[in-house]
Length: 263
Length: 304
Image (cartoon, rainbow over all chains, first blue to last red; front, side, top):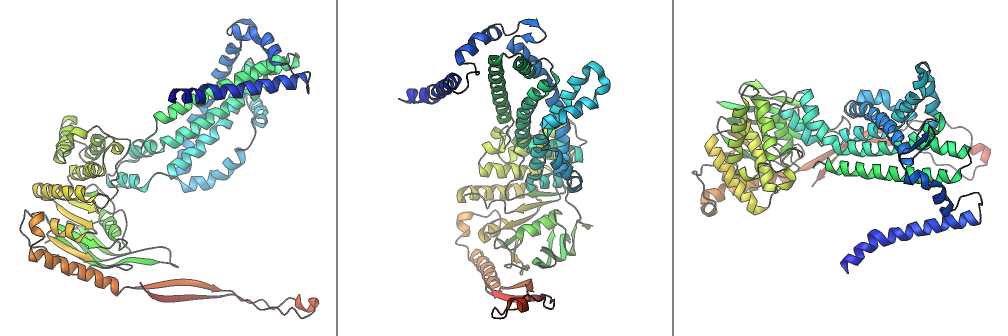
């Protein structure tokens, strides 16, 4: 009884969800929009990319995992940069009222700017870099867009440190560096990781937009190219890949986040 | 010879408008090696008093001196045990204490620091739980870690801020015995804040009641001239114990009975003029002379 309930929750119900979604997709492709490739057609045309996921036939004709790999590498770089810049800014915002008053308004203004708006600026910024320009521009865009959740969550975390912990630091006369590493950072870690997780989600969103605009090889670039080449089933392949990879990244971060839960 | 001395100390909170005085005219001194308990109602400002001695708060008036040096900031020479343990949750019991040891004796060798930490863990009977994090420990065990941490700093004075009030009655009794034993072994100067007169009498050499707030002040200090070691069971039948207890409770209750609360508030009395709706509209809408709202300060005395 218990086991079957477990199976129902974990396996059967989600399967029903997928079946319903695929059925709807099929119906829409047969009735409303004849241009939309049906699930069967999508599979038939994407098979080669899925079954030979690492094959390289040309610059813009590669296995889907190979494309994903390119995208992930760029995301990893941009994301690391975002964390390296964002975390200290968050700490300063949380610790200093003066810093908050000075920089919070500008952060609030830059935060809602779309990656699509940042990318051209990124390309302009690295115009001198020649061939590297599109990569650096994409990197810039990922970092600046993915940074904000880390900045804000870290700041909230620092402000939420219980007075007790700070009292201990005061009574023990911990030096500034020791207070930071022994008290402030451990106390803020759970908040920081929430920020890191949100940031990773955004970084993955941004990569697709950045690749579409710059046309560099990757899932997003492939998607845009196949749209222009009228291979619509590959668009769906890319969407599913992006979704699945994003989901896996989020799960991974959630595991890491729980690992670093203090208190 | 006064070791810790407080002279005319006062402390209040809040801005000028709605300032509430918590403590006033606090005068008391503690001799070296003495165990003093301060008993008062919750909300009387007991924690404020201990924060002043620890240096976490600065007094509005008066001076505090420890060993002839004025207390201006917190420091490890005053070991404090907080009511809510205040252990760092990401460090084990050992690491919490070791952090304090490391900070107080930076010149010691690593071996000596570890040995010192182990010694105090053993003193509070926690050797078996040394590697556990605070959330894996019971309330009583956490408070023992906190006591061990305070003692391991080898402070000139030990401040206990309602150390046992968050514990159940049985654990409380055990820890009282333990504090009593540790005090007799170390002969530290101790100031303990508590809301339990029995606890104060059982542990302390001298007990001082703190009147009910706001504007609390200390009552006459009562010497607990009961021989040590004190037996909890026998104590209940001791006439002297009953007498001290009666005095303290009487003082506390009287202070509460006489309590007047003075509430001082800034009031804005808006200048509102009734409008006569029978007048024709053009007459009504004519701009009237601008008048000011009146600002008054009212003080109300309340019994509570």
